[in-house]
Amino acid sequence: MELNSGLFSTTVLWWTAGLYLSVFGLAVHLAPWRRVLFSKLLHVFLGSCVALVVLWSIKAQINGDLTFHLLGVTALTLMCGWSFAVIGSAIALVGVTLNAGSGWEMFPVNAMLLGVIPITLTQVTLVVIRSLLPKNFFVYVLVNAFLTAGLTAMLVGYLAAGLLVWSGSYSLAELSDTIMPFFPLMFMPEAFLNGWIMTVMVVYRPHWVYSFSDELYIKGK
Picture 1 (cartoon, rainbow, N blue to C red):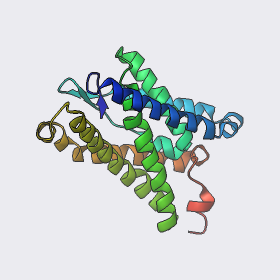
Picture 2: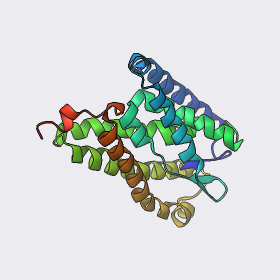
Picture 3: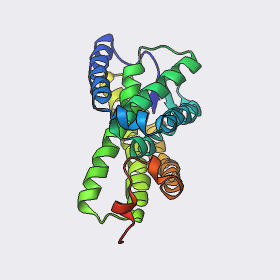
Picture 4: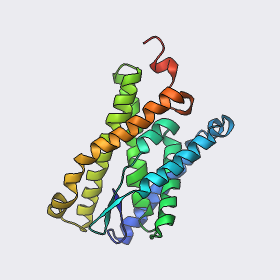
């Protein structure tokens, strides 16, 4: 869920901007630039950013302040890794903001909600699932891509609602009657989108997927 201007105080926006810049700087520092630049995968990363811009541009607006659209960042994280997913989501949000002609004051908040938080949740889930469940193709697609994407989208929606209640922009009763009933409905489209993308990628272009390898998930299974 994307938030529009005027919902948070200047103090909250500045603190969020500081937090986001710290996370973004960490992502730039940790990103394996050599792997992307010297393995001819730069076009994959840039193409993913363009696809994310298109996906985030297809949205529905509610109450004038709240915007719904699919995230797609679970697939981006599984393909590119945490660092490049954070960088890619920032590039995509810049493109969407420029295309919409909207203000930049909410950029850090939306970058955290649409990018950093779901990307981090996806990365943590990937590590946890690898340690707890068998490493095979179906676990990767169904759990790491399908299930993780749907649950992450729901959690981000509820987190955004919590922030709106905390800021005083909306009451819990208002959100419960307007947008919160839609959050469970976002599970299936988000899950199917990311699950379908990752299924196609690991079948036809497994060398494009940073988190997948034939040796780990297929051979000997």
